[in-house]
Image 1 (spheres, helix red, strand yellow):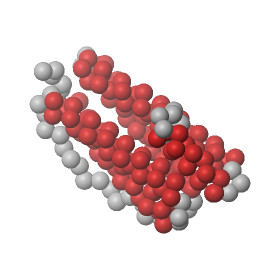
Image 2 (cartoon, one colour):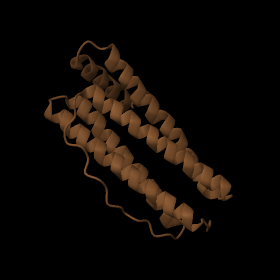
Image 3 (cartoon, one colour):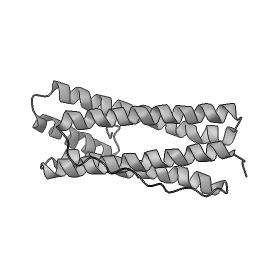
Image 4 (cartoon, helix red, strand yellow):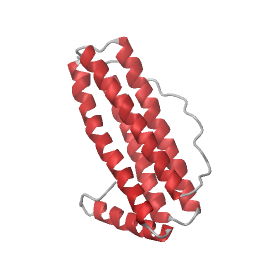
Length: 171
């Protein structure tokens, strides 16, 4: 069994909190969009919420596999109202950038501690964050180029359909 130090356990538990918070934030965004009859954008954010929960659970499982008790944290109440789609996507990109910084700090901590198992485990998250930031960056570009919200809804609908069919367009 790989040994990790107490500060890394604490840092991984904090990342569990970040991932669950992101899941709740995306769920709130999806609900907001669903309430505006933007079902494809809502579905995109619901998928993001599910994905963030999976990330949290991946961390939980890692801690359990190493014999540590994960902490399931309290999280902040997510926002309930949003100005518009661009604000939602910009907030999402900002959130993902913060998560990326946190993951990089975890990787740095693992390297400093010569915790090779945790370093290897975290590399998946590094790759995942590149994808997350790229997805939200592209969506923000589409919003900036679109003349109306229905064009964005159409784009997201096709993006989801390609992703479900095994294509690479899923965000």
